Length: 596
Image 1 (cartoon, one colour):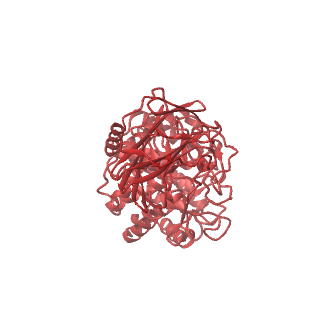
Image 2 (cartoon, helix red, strand yellow):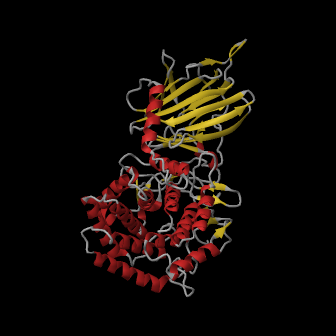
Image 3 (spheres, one colour):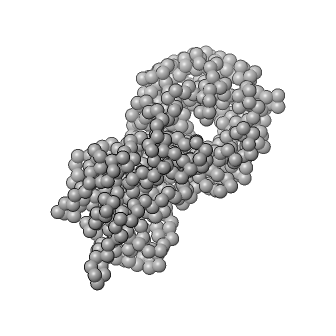
């Protein structure tokens, strides 16, 4: 390591003690994601990591400054600087880059990959690219969203630090000259000579706390990422496609489920009460990811979505819920933590999805199985799961459900059409069930849905008693419920563009007849759905226009959330949102193939 403590005539220059251990929240577009499949961290533009749950996605956070709790880990230039950053292609290895008055500094960050369920290894490599680099380092851990209080530290003879917070033991290497300030945080200032570098390695959890060789862990992390993420050379946006896949890969437990987002409580609208915990597996969202990773060759993530989905269907049967924890157990009910939350948001933990029936999820899971059947990847257990889903749709399609947007129990049009799409696509393959029976059920649902939900203008209503259109209704023709050239499909496509679009972004539906953007932001997933809808009817230029508009909503890290504030040009909601990246990935591949 080419690092030396910063010195002066009075000895080592210490960072101020007792100063605040928070860097304050940033706008969402500036955060990068580090992930290893088992958990994820956010990195801000000041080199701060204000969010990391340990040991798993839905555990208590050990860094919770993002939502007003204790815990942060920062590597920040000591003087004035201008920030930038980028991911190394096809990885979740992030490089913060600062131009200072004296040169250029980079901090290379990653969670060691492949990840281990019992041990987190957080790598940070500070590099003096041009000129000497002076950086301030701050480390404060506090388990369970800060409820564990101050960390307890012990310095070893080798210079490493042993840290305990709650029941979690940690080891920190590279902070040999750190001091403990009066808040209990570890602080140091480093000077890295021009062309040199300095490694910081934080191990969280696990029993073996021997310090690893940073070079070895970095090489393994690079190699594993490059092997895990395809190049997507045949897509129209290879870089963004590979990045979207890396995000989905990083948010998926190996052999398990994919969390919908890495965070909780980030507001969709300031002080509007729409704050949720999305650190769980929504079967619908995972189906979208599975379909996106099966557009061309059947990728590893497609098979993993099948494994998790089939396990839940066989295990739960008639009791199938819309969402689960990554280990397949039930999502905890909503509670709050007593923290201030992200500004405008809340500190909600858990989710109310447990008590919901979401009919559309059954249809979207069948669409996932049809994708797997196309690649000849269905196993016997998958066929048993398909039979269970067919039975569930047959028995329950007439019931009110909570729908894709989870806004109350009603007879949602999209839910029925999603089932029709799933039935008609799975009927094309040998599943052990008579295809005539499957298509007969699809025809019956379509007939009743048309009778109840088609407006006099030929446009699909959001539900029988609501005349307005819903952008989710763009997807069923894309998925095979009916032809994209069907008059109902074309009329609905026109209605979405006329009623739900502002400045190139698509809103889900009109809320209480308010102007677009007043009640909530545009939904980026819906913009990608509009791109797919145009592609299906041969309007390739329009499809590209919508695709390019949506993918440009991100900041430097290229992450997308659920919503986008069109006026303020800011991301809204939890970050990153997996289904948004799944639709981006699907669009990029399908645009390369052309209308089908």
